Image 1 (cartoon, rainbow, N blue to C red):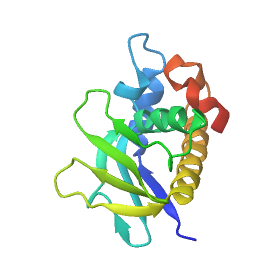
Image 2: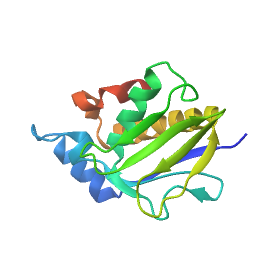
Image 3: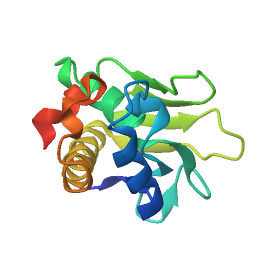
Image 4: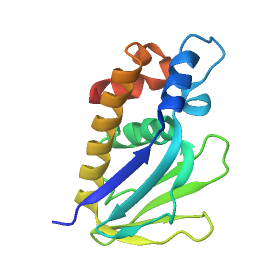
Length: 152
């Protein structure tokens, strides 16, 4: 089976900054916290050459909402759109494959079995939710992160 992976890297200073933001009423975690580099891929192929710098929480929450709607990606695609609308990652069905593309300059296109994409997104969500809980134990009290609770 082809293994689809969602990789992310958040440095410790950003984790600490995100923890501090938990105490600030104005902070929106999917915009103001958890900034890092995101990449998607299979084997030695990646969508982004050096990662997409974005809010990992934004990608995670939108992924959780999409997976939670009960409609397989193979039937209905999905577009991750950064909250500021700047960049997109497309997950579009093509037969039994999902074509993963982005509007970011220099990004690659991947064709991945639909079930591999869903398994990879679930694995990412579980790991990210565990990491969030480890760094910020009360993070899921943030309304904007509520979609991640079921993965923690």
